Length: 296
Image (tube, rainbow, N blue to C red; front, side, top):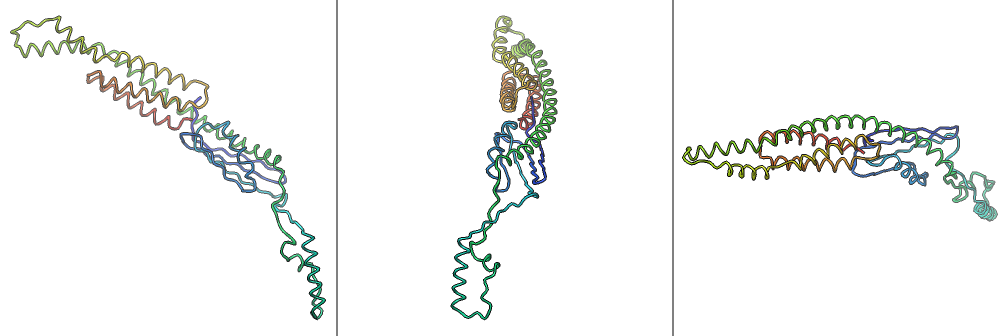
């Protein structure tokens, strides 16, 4: 199955205490490169996010953003250090006993609370298992969204590639039809050229002409290249129509092989018409190569 590497997905989990939003953006990349941006206090879930994403997204540069809004509970807890408060109280009481503070020696609650280490705030304790469960609900929705978008785009890419594969096959068939005529035409040109040079004064050996034409035909024979090219086109269709995941790299390799065969055909054929057809082939191969860069 052909899927594009480009896509976007968004998922939301919400209850009376918290809202979690996950956004996924993906673009072309040679490998699977996943980055996650989320509040640091929830970083314990990052590897779980990456693992879940890799199960669905095989290739691409993938950015996952997680935003969390806690509106049903505080994100911080307050810790009371009674030992520190008692030490401050004792010290302040002793200070008051040794100095005449004219009635201002009362130790207030606000005074004690403001002392260092008496009251401290720390991140609220998090039920990690429950949070991951909620997060995965939003993540699954986002992954479904981006997968659907990539599949729709992949269908368009597949249709375009199949259209170009048909053009390539027609071009290959035209080359195959032209190829046998090259030897005959070469023999005729050779016969005409020799007659012009010798001005008909010497009889031309048909056997020698046939031998020269056969040598030329052997050097310019492109049968094997045409067979391999046809096989590559069939394989391309097979990859496009298969249910196999992540066929992009396989198609990319196949395109390189088709380009190699086209170059060999052009260099061996020694024929203007076939050279022209070869250039048409290479143009379609290049268009497929460009499309393949966006296939997962």
